[in-house]
Amino acid sequence: MFDMTSLVILLPAIALAAYAQWKVHSTYNRYSTVEVSRHLSAEDAARRILTAQHIDGVSIERTDRRLGDHYDPRKKVLRLSAPESNSIAAIGVAAHEAGHAMQHAKSFAPLVLRTAIVPIANFGSQLAIPLFILGIFTQLPVLMTAGIILFSTAVLFTLVTLPVEFDASRRAVHALEQSGMVTVEELGAVKEVLHAAALTYVAAAAMAALQLVMLLLSANRRR
Image (cartoon, rainbow, N blue to C red; front, side):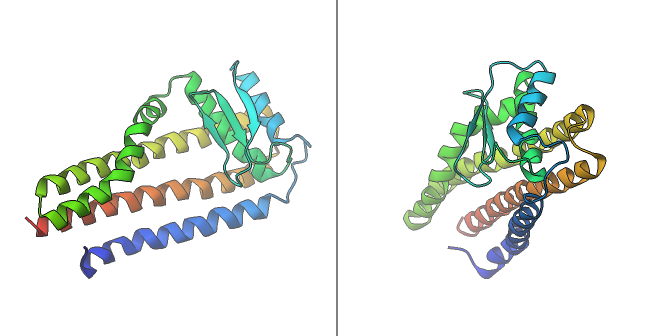
């Protein structure tokens, strides 16, 4: 479906994605064995942040997926993969997810937008490529165009995700710094963990954007 020129376009994103995965896993593994001096758990840290921000009604649950920590704004549930851990990595991630809860409480616009387009983006990402390929085989440009439009919603989701994730990390660092739950040295390590995690979202956005470019180039050649 694509020629070598189109495929070469993806190489930078593939390299960035591989580096981002290596970076986040190596950084998390490094700091998952380093305990904070205050001896509080990731769940304690998240709860203290929420309490300090006067955020009620958010429950904290365990998720069995490693690095599957996330905040569900629809159910107001903060899920942590290691809630009992008092490592720098676990506390940094928990604070980041609490940052998402803060965004939700403040109706942070990018988070509101991302939450709204999740169903559309999921639908678009699943149907876009099959529809585009069908358009090629049937020689119906309208199907290729529809595939491109649907895939664009997935690209939009990855782009909107960037300010959401960066802002959550900023809120997490600020909350940990203001609360005194970690030392200055530990806060630096938390920043390393969160910066590594943020790189995966940058890589995802780059990959999606370049895939969209490939679709546009392929469609243009067939018209």
